[in-house]
Length: 253
Image (tube, rainbow, N blue to C red; front, side, top):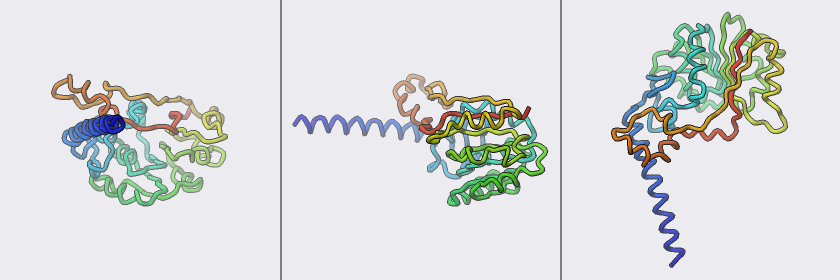
């Protein structure tokens, strides 16, 4: 009997947690539709809000980078290279904010390519987005070659150790770079990247931070509800960044 009662209590708690989460998710979908609600890419259309994680819809995804992205969008880049584009959140967002720029979106998983293409189409910027597969030293070098002003965005799960090498790709010495750094067994990636670019770039480290209720951009009709739904509100912005050690923002000297 005790086991049955304990299981019943656990089950009821699980049901409550999931119920609260789906209530929060439903309201996020209702308010946002298929557009990013806040942040530097506010107004960007997403393909299907039902399948997009709420952190993208809310515009809180990687909000640590907001001020850096705003600064970069004033630089008038002629080429923006996104390495690890996934479904195109940054590729499309930067294309919208930088109408003068040509976008090169590298994504190794080709299943994402139609999604990037469709996202570009619904945001009316498909003529400026060049979608490519796995990024290698030769293809990255070619994409930034002869660029007067270039930005490289990189989130490739450890591939930064191979690709961000100005000795193999001299053009990187002139590029602005925003890269997410990942834990790599046996590799001190922060020291390696710092050493490679210390002579050519000013390097700023940006740390990850936990989301708080204050980060939630949608206001509840009744403010007291935020307390009731606090756990689900935080989960709607959770990025589960277990392998990330933050970002480097590299500005050419």
